[in-house]
Amino acid sequence: MTDAAAEALREGRTALGIELGSTRIKACLVDADDPATVLAVGSHAWENRYEDGLWTYALDDVWSGLQAAYADLVADARERHGVALDTFGAIGVSAMMHGYLAFDEAGELLAPFRTWRNTNTGAAAAELTEAFGVNIPLRWSIAHLHQVVLDGEAHVPGIRFVTTLAGYVHWKLTGEKVLGVGDASGMFPIDSASADYDADLLARYDALRPAQGPAGRLPVDHVADLLPDVRVAGAASGALTVEGAALLDPSGTLRPGIPFCAPEGDAGTGMVATNAVAPRTGNVSAGTSIFAMVVLERPLERVHHELDLVTTPVGDPVAMVHCNNGASELAAWVGMFARFAEAAGAPLTDDAVYETLFREALDGEPDGGGLLAYNHLAGEPIAGLTEGRPLFVRTPDSRLTLANAIRAQLYGVFGTLALGMRVLDDEGVGLDRMFAHGGMFRTAGVAQRFLAGALGAPVSVGDTASEGGAWGIAVLAAYARAVEETDAAAAASGISLASFLDDRVFAGAAIATAEPDPADAAGFAAYLDRYRAGLAVEAAAVSAL
Image (cartoon, rainbow, N blue to C red; front, side, top):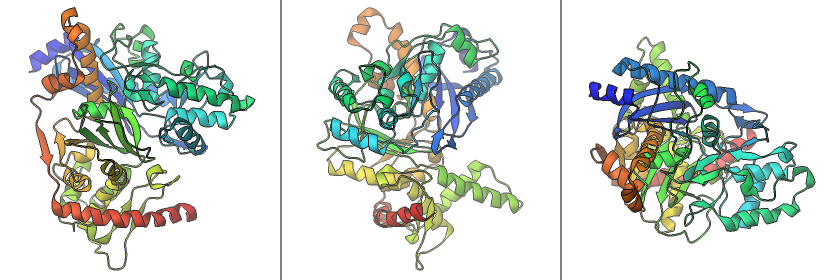
């Protein structure tokens, strides 16, 4: 394989995916002809900042982090295959969805980047939800944009372009102001029939503008003029410019001209990474946030504040349960135990600590022994919380053991998600298979088993789970390359993304499926009843602390 891989690297028969996650920027290089084969990886750790009451990342950190992750990938390719990388067959960029990046006519940032994690957009989200008849979550870009309009922020008259983090990076690397339809669906509602922004809702938004005060008046007649153009998976979306190559690789080795797929959000790459793009399939992605995506067969009957309506990378409708808080609190507990091991003179790697604690959790009581864990480091709209206070709660008769404590923490990661998924159950949404990905699923058979119990549905994990979204966007880049190389006759019939994933990516994948254990399902149901009741404690903590 090494000789074949080296040849693919030298000839540029590869696809590079880069994803800017909440805590890590990852790069993943695959064989474009066999995207299941990962040739090299790179990563860089970074963190958001809480400044002036808002969660943000500095744009300088975006570029230093991208350069570090790319350099790490280049070094990995050289070590594994003895090849100095200077080109690729295709590139794709993905990042955290939603948020607010606004630029003026000269392309200068007008206000600090506001991430999906911010919950200051309540007035805007409520007004738009009422005007549209569609749930507009707090973190969506249109909610952020409308909030700065309502607040009359000084930068509003200068706005000429609004995009997401993936759209921003793609723009700077290619010069193209475009966005994949999945990521775009977290900016503004999408009409799946046209795979573009919903024209009726765009008109409704424009009709709201006469009521806007002059201080916050947008400088265009149509909000669509401020948004990126929408592209479906496989569509041509620009190429690496000379300036973009220098941004990604300051050494000057990387050659320009490499084609890009449409930039996507982490929800879309999660669907690709778990082969969950067809109706009645779904996936759960667990990281700093946690969310579930279920591809719909039919529209939902009612508007639910717990559910976002987004799309797959080809524009099919998806119900999304998005929770701002995922596995960060669990990681903090694991870090505490890692320090204990070190202090005791028996240091363990982080992976070994996770493995030990997760295995211990299997011996816990099905309901967590009466313990409750709230992972709310930030606000959680589904739970009705504008701020977060992580809590570990027990009653005098709870059974405080290590196994129960860790099981409760794992259940806590899935708690708010399960509240949202119960709404889908009430809508009668069909689900044949649910895939999970994210680092917490690397310990085989633990988090996966508990999630199956929480959802009451089979949960599968593939051997690509730990690669996550960086691999998913690399696969989308390979798909765009395959579409481009298809001859005219074949192009007429099309290469669907679903068939590309089935036939070229997942055909030989090792998939492990956990069926819901009845005891786990009953135990989690009891846990969730206490969890729902205990939200009053969480709300009191936000008020008091």
